[in-house]
Image (cartoon, rainbow, N blue to C red; front, side, top):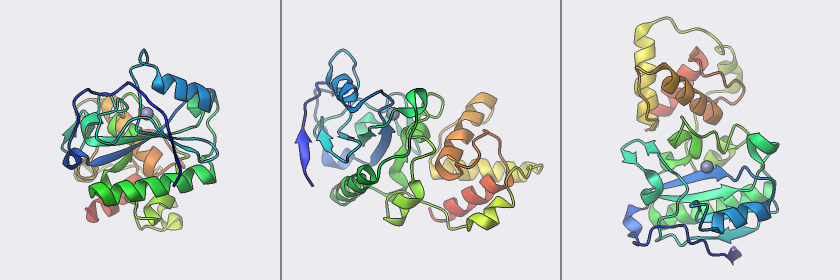
Length: 241
Ligand SMILES: [Zn+2]
């Protein structure tokens, strides 16, 4: 795996131990070009960075060392972890994103992402359930890496988790309204078990978290509304944990 060395000054001065690395967070750059993204992530004024950037042709850049805390996650939460910069490795995929023209991720980009993830998972013993997207950990603020990110493909390679329900079966339950309070409570439990953090008595927080869940696990319809398809998926996922 060829890695080009870059340097970003945007990390905490204090180093961290290998043991504190528990998660991998996937992002997209959301900028017009690869060059522009690298410049921003390496500029001290931007106060953002990531450990790796993967270009459109698969080129891998390292900006920050693993034992340094890069500034990619911001205000975030996943399961029992808060403010995830200190516990995570950030990987940015070059993509214009929703703002400038969101495109499919490139094959070479994904194959190199798989290689990096595999080596990190092995080195730091990262759990499958702790490989997630920026929108999963900051659902109120972020939508990257977005619905075009192929989580199912990664899960086939043991990176992240995926359900094992057939899509033809699931499709039947799309937009199937949930009336039972017990079902809703069970869904919320499952969502929390998967790792999502949200407040149940704040409607907007719940809707945005719902959208993050859909972007990850049910990209065909991202409407922020709980339906039976989402319920079945969450139930299936939570059984694996
Ligand atoms: Zn991000």
